[in-house]
Image (cartoon, rainbow, N blue to C red; front, top):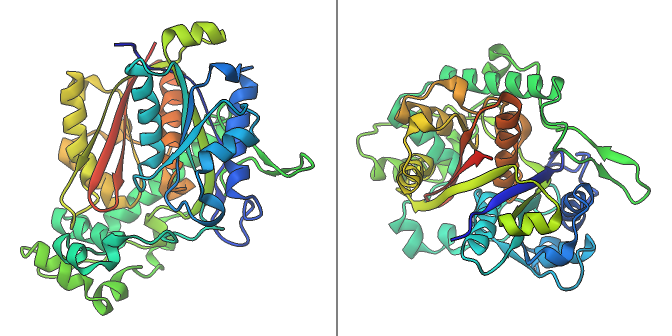
Length: 402
């Protein structure tokens, strides 16, 4: 079986996902094109070698619909021979797109594939694509449907994380992201977004608030308390977990992931394809896995899938140098570290989505690139990347430098 290697990765900066955000006037197509074009140009890539483009997009409707991957590949001048496909596994779509690309290579059916993702949350609102899960009673009742923020509060309550615990984690995320930007850790992988005249619209993550402290966060009201009580979701949570007497609502805008716009692309190929393209591999994709997890807790999938992917790779936690887990909510990462008794110094060392934002379909590909850059910068060897997913799932990938 051929190995799948990562040859390069790029991402856009993340723009605030609001009408006054720097990327609001940039379409989903333009965002995806920016990442694909940068990947092609900086590697002088002969796109005749590219077999497919796989892009994650969580709300593929309107301007983001109609197979955005194919449209972006054409728009980025990859040539009409390069196909594209859009996938959706909620928040893990970007990482799974890279895994899908790797699977094509490892199966021997394709030689070089681009995986990545895109989301313009300022232009296509979260949840715009709808779905059966929240609205069809037969599945909503069976799966204890509740909004993710309520589920995050359930995790915090069940596993004993206080408001101060979550806020302290958020402050640290902001500090780490600010330090990483200040020291230029992201510089080699972030490609600016420009307008049609080549004027730079954004070249740095816009959502960050480096001055955040515990006192500032203490002023914020819980975001999901009213929703949980008035919508009946508190009762759903307690019905699913009767050991919980009442939910402790600890999450708010400051310790949850930010709504942002962005795109990312990762070039994956066999060793032979890399030689044909004149490229040197940066890492090998050692293993990847998906799993379903308990739907009410919903966001604990990273714990379950980490066990699965480590077993698949024949590795233990001690074999992993760095862990990158999407900061959907503070309690998600706190539970992950608690479950495996991890040293926080090995987890999200350059901050995460609480500080920089979570462009749903792109985040997985972004954080894969972030941790690869960090492995190279520090001389470390292995990393595990994982994300929690709506409806109770988890995705994980293990990479190692070559």
